[in-house]
Image 1 (cartoon, one colour):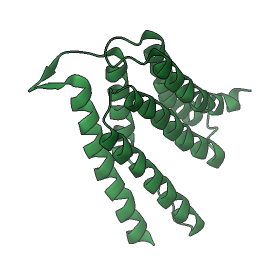
Image 2 (cartoon, one colour):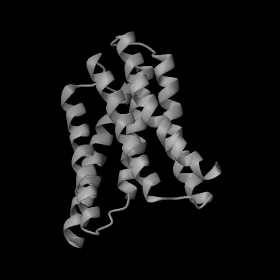
Image 3 (cartoon, one colour):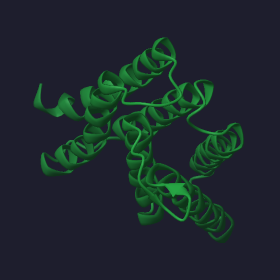
Image 4 (spheres, helix red, strand yellow):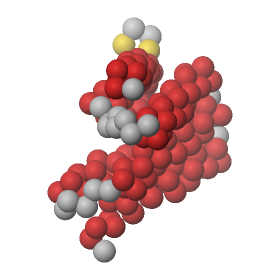
Length: 179
């Protein structure tokens, strides 16, 4: 049982991402606190930390677990971003850029795997995920304060976009360097 807990935490993100999206869509508001979706997204983001930490601590890491963790992050992020885009809290352009990067890098890592090239998660990729989770949280609670005409949610989201593409470039470089 203990060795399956990290996988269950990742599976929770696969389920909770679309649930949060549904709750965002039924709320439908462009402004204001979305308490239940925000709480579920926060719990989902925490599971990303704990599934990896527990897998390493209990020495129960596996290829399936690494795959599931990656897919869970993509489903979680994509679902919530799409929901926020539909209700007008995130622009279409940034949503498409973030999702496109996820597809490209996931595909690249899959291709690399078929060629026997390992492209493990980088520190930049982990920072990207953390920034995206924070941005989603700020977007869901609708913090109104900011700097220079940008809300804190926008600042963190734009920063996550920049880090996303820098880390994406690093993954591509790793593939072509080792391929």
